[in-house]
Length: 64
Ligand SMILES: [Zn+2]
Image 1 (cartoon, protein in one colour):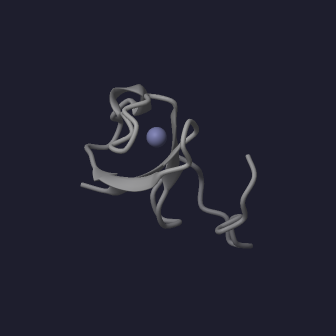
Image 2 (cartoon, helix red, strand yellow):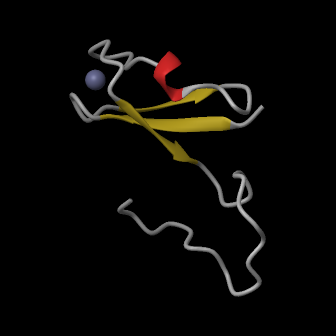
């Protein structure tokens, strides 16, 4: 199972959870403040449902 990284939009807490692929992000709540306003951040470039770009995907760039 992949580890998903989350950032709480309410308090800014960053945490990681081990979840099945395809788990809904709204199932996840912040362990610090309990808010469900969390955003998932995929840890690692190999995880995801995109195609393989030979030129190199936008790994590590923020925003979004
Ligand atoms: Zn929080």
